[in-house]
Image (tube, rainbow, N blue to C red; front, side):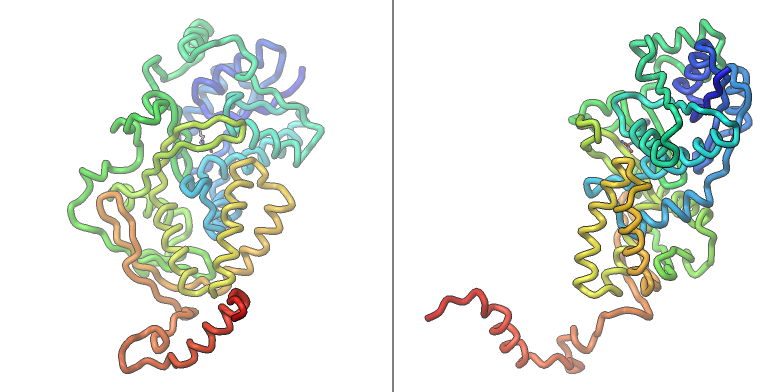
Length: 391
Ligand code: ARG
């Protein structure tokens, strides 16, 4: 019997995948990657076994996800099309890495996933698997199976006795991890419609958020968030705390129409409270501590970095080279940023750093001023010289 390692989430699609693969003669081994989605993994494991999986692996990937995936993209300030902070996109390469590892351990030659043929995730899973082990075969049942709708799929699941807790009414497709939530489908498919209240999962509606602002101070050490309000936390706890505090203030909602890799535009909404705060705080510190040329050049790379992550090219030579560059830029990114969270907004209210390049005696307009304004004239003459016409 051919063994297949299935990326399993416990949802409708991957559950039906177990049965579908089994019916085609495969021995199914389910792999669940814990990237902080906060599910009841025992229940999911049981569901996989009850649906026909031979064996279930649950990989706790949280620490590696934070240190090797979330952190580098935070340090890169990577945001796809300027908005999407990449929570789902970042989780795919690490899950794929462990699918490959599980395949090797189980001596399986096939990997399967439950992604649709219209999305980015199929690309991310498959490209990563192929980079890590080109010999592995891939099956994507959802791309080929016979169900034309979610309703048909649910009927099949019921018929086959697949244990599920879904209803035909559940409208949104949701992907969640520690770094954020991605939500699509249902009313969101019309880009003119404001997201219904029930679409958001982890943030307070800004209108109902506290009417007094919350101030928080975030410390970074060499580009790594280390403290909230002077209290040291490990990254997992720090992110969870920020998700909670910022989420309560309605911070971190993103509503966008994005360009998918497969060529279609889609409207999706995201919630990333902690990521929103950390991106802002990190950029504020960089503004203080990086010189102009480095900062501007880094911005160009941020754009590219976000594309590479979004496009599933995590394990590519360019991404690796940019990582080395980004790492070099973080040496002096230490200090504190004060953020003000208020009814959906998150703004910087203060920043300080021992590596600050801000010089008050140069910036000030008071008697403390040390800037020699007379030098500006010569500077401007030379600066503009190449563009001046000969008289
Ligand atoms: N569009 C996002 C991306 O490609 C999120 C997709 C997540 N899937 C979902 N079920 N909402 O990364």
